[in-house]
Image 1 (cartoon, rainbow, N blue to C red):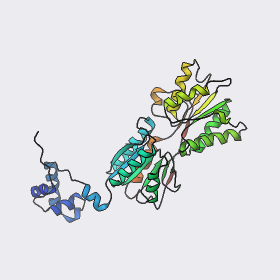
Image 2: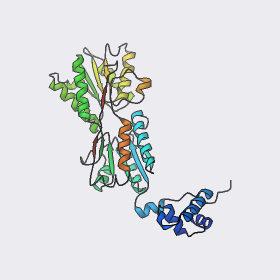
Image 3: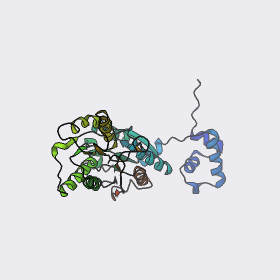
Image 4: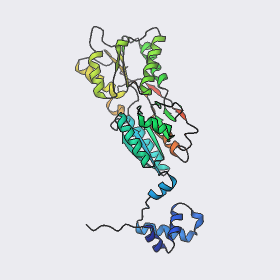
Length: 336
């Protein structure tokens, strides 16, 4: 196939009958530098020639591109995908593009993406599900504009954060279990280096202790945030002379895995085992309308993050960091 000729700013200038400097000023929004007739001719030439300006030079001159990056730990998780979609929608409205990177909860991948995004001169990074890593620590020391979502910064508490009060939510789940008289209780908690998982567990644990029913450490199981992990952990918490009557799960996918294992063992949810998830994954409405959970407003979180990228929001985040705590909701369904 014949290679299509690359249209340049010189072609636009020739078609419009003006200088390349005039075309550049108009395309960069400096409308006061040209008459209405000149601006009209330039825009007509751009459309006719299907000219697409190369933004690299502008990005280098400003040391910032009209692009933001979202680093997420799991692109297959519908809860994370909902946040990503809201951020993408919001950033598009302010004229920015979004790059999506899947860190898979791995520090080495997270660092690789952070360095790659720095080389692309992105306007900022939204870090959903941060893990401790040397590259992240360096980026924060360099005051790179990063906003943390769902999990707080593992190094500096003064960095911008958008999420819920996980400690309070964990406490509310414990109070619900106590009100229902569930006992014995088990917990399948998420990664300890995740502030979200850690605070959910601590809130749950402390509320149980305050009610006079401290949780047995032997009933606390560590897990990643997948269905497979929930399924594997279910074998232990459902076995023995005193299997769990109720389980607080690190997130909804963990609850899905436990639910499947309950069915295979002939156990009924909630008659034999009560399950409580976290996040209110968008899949629940279609696949798990039975699951009680803590609803985290993913769309609102994504919208709030997008607003930080608007104008000088991220640029000023270093001097005026935001701690944006959005409200959560207890959603009680048949599983608990």
